[in-house]
Image (cartoon, rainbow, N blue to C red):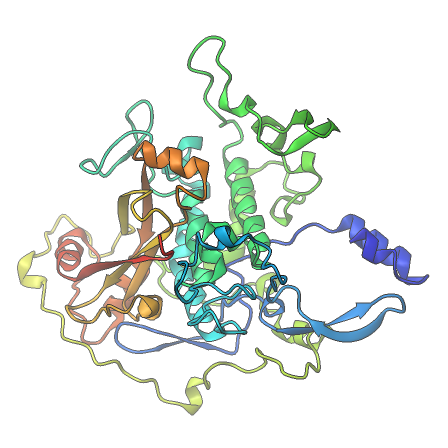
Length: 507
């Protein structure tokens, strides 16, 4: 960036040099609405109209963009470097590396020409923005629940609970994630939360969905900045929690181990001091701070209030299932962004009109649905249980990390028999989709650590919030789900909870 800034003529040069010095990687806020002109989202009985669209920011969706180029700071339209990464003539990777994601001798599943999001073919040259939008909009309700659970609730109050999906103890028969003291800790983790958004953004054949090529997509870096932000928020709520001490005298604690290959101080090639976890505990020590913490002074209650002010309006909770409107600071910036020179007057804009007309000019299509059998007779409510629901519902999973020798996705549905397709490419668009668990892992051949975990038969856990879809069922006029109390939800899940597993890579 400094090299590019130096190419501008005075007086522009100093301005760009200053901007380059102050630049920090922006984070991709999955829960910031991009637009308030409406979007259609599939639902179990009918397509639902949502006022707010949580697609990717439009600066990532436009193939072309306007920038001010050196040396004279003139506006020119160029290929958008945030839209896609185009591989060089040698495809940037040796052919044997491409073989980790594309089966040799078969038509490629992943494009070797450029990075793509939600493609249906490796020969596409553009993202499927509609499929990408549906994916992120469907993921939002469960995602925001997981976000608050991870950073501020008791089951994730230890490092081993929140950081990794690895099962410390426990097995397939216990369905519990346990710590070293045999205490139950939260299923799911920041690692799993991060992995799910890889496929929410990439789709089954998108580069973001598989480990060896994910980082080529420019959105990868913004996504990981958001993951780093989530990690920073968890640290702020748990300032005194860190790695456990070494188990044996003379043994090096995990937080003191080198984080290869990242040099804290490099004296010469192959010689120097590496970062460890203690060196990276504070973002301020690394030269940046997230906007959530500016002027905070370490007050956890105030931080939680700030986050609720940002996001509570969209949370679908049992005691408040309605989506309202964001505060002034979180309102969509669509008009401001599209009137700026970056996206104004593009020759072929992709995101200037809603994907579907507003409900005032169209009728909502009801979906043909097999009737749900009444569950009331199966378990009558007792007088001891309040009529108002007082808990969240989740699907917890325990799986073998290396089950597919590569990435795979478990899709969960609340649907009658026969309503879930066997077409893996369309599962993410299903109106009955309740959530997913994406195992963002590489093959043993591509990753030494993955090979080690395969040899250990390492198990992983994840959690999927399903309360938002259960609340949707309660809203239906022909709903047969009596309430969200356990005696009604449990038999409903026995009858209607379904899942499919999709292998993402050819291994």
